[in-house]
Length: 237
Length: 212
Image 1 (cartoon, rainbow over the protein chains, first blue to last red):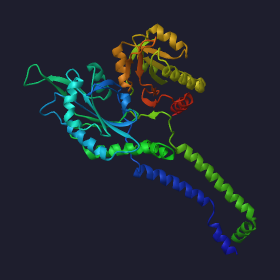
Image 2: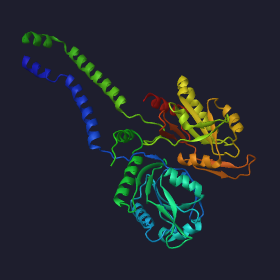
Image 3: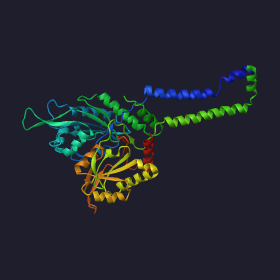
Image 4: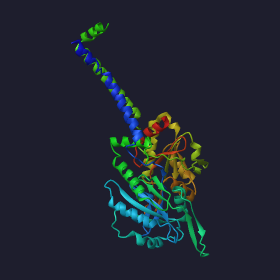
């Protein structure tokens, strides 16, 4: 009788409390060490704008609210050694069409760096070989407008430096000097990732888009806390 | 010694032991709840930003005709809104929700500065702004600049605006992004509230930011 009682004493309820505490501590530690959920940092606010696309239709930053949007910068008179961003955007578009998600729409935007010469018509001609049929579920706009406002947008909002420089081959022509960049903006209009490169790593971009898509899909209920914790612990890829 | 301990233990009635177990589990449960509430990240009502750079400063003219900058309000939480005085519904609703948030905050509303930058600088003169904002709250600050100055500030805060001609007697309307932005005491843009966020929700987020 005394023997069984002594055995019972070993399962003192206090051990339950210790166990629970250990469980909490281990969960928090493993969350911050193994980073089970990956999120992209919310870097800064993307600029607001009201411009025109290649079909002469108005396009504003509000049109992309609720969509994951990949921006890039180019201009139609860009020739020779100009980075071929159009072809890369076209590739990304094809890949996104394949991985279309139910929860979020994707969009592409090419911003003109030379609004003085890039009229909507000029952009239309420039875009035409790449745009293809109209029925894609991933929209792609080439946008242009007031040069000063575009400077505020590209230079100020996206932080991309660009300036005209004389063309060595022709006195009255000019080129735009700039470092190529791609910028991923979420549905809140927040910049989530920047790729400062002339040659985009497609896997990296698609992974980033997937992280954002997952985050949107899990933005309700208890999963939201896990995602906020991932931001707190800076679980960045 | 051991035998006497065992003796007391064994004579303890079963219901006492059940009671102790229950009590310990209860304490553990409460501790867990408290720990969860402490550790659980606060869920903001607005969208969060983790910008490494301070919010873009600006210098415009206030409704009293004086120069005013964002940096003048360092140490306060700044609610930044872009609107205009002839705005039919969105702007008055938003300003009313901000006013409600300040009412909820009570005394702590002294630590908050509301700034409305007009997206209609052609019609919203200093006098017009002064008269308009007095209807809402005497503490609200209205700022105006040249159209280009306003465009530059709005762009950097993710706000677009565009004139929209109408047949109404009010003349043109200005379409614009209707978010409210929160700049914290150190000058960092922290939150963006979508249009329709309630005053009480804005107040909750402000309280959290003031406390942390």
